[in-house]
Amino acid sequence: MRSPSRFRTILAALAVLALVLAVWIGVSILTLPSVTPLANPRVSIAITVKDWERKDHPFVVGPGNPRWTPYGALPPALKKAVVASEDANFYSHEGVDYEAIREAIKTDWRKGKFVRGGSTITQQAAKNLFLTREKTLIRKVKEIVLARRMDDALSKSRILELY
Image (cartoon, rainbow, N blue to C red; front, side, top):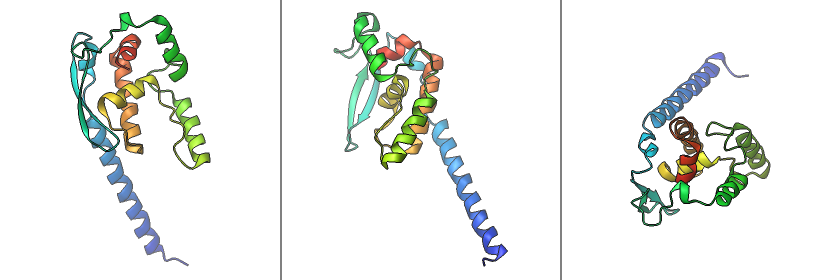
């Protein structure tokens, strides 16, 4: 039988660990970049994209990129196809589809690995513009926070254009 003092020590250690984790997540969220500059479609934004080997690649998002296509020039059929294949609930959620995430977690748990993402178009745009490709819980939390901010600050057409 375990002694009460050992149990309290373990409980205290778990509480400290939980507090440290909460502070780390809080700081990570507070230091996320602003999504406000994305609101102006005439402004180009220079970002750094990391590849799978964590090597940096500069990239311009917006009219400063010669391959940039503004929303109005995108064929309507392409817009519909992207929404249908990537995020059927795009126009009805606020950047995050919690039901899709829940289903992805269930599938991933059953398979024992990451096989289904559950990310919305907005979450994917947030990841591609601001985050790395690593599959971690903290990256997913950051992605959700940025997606909610983007949905608050940008129109759905602007989000699709950035995507």
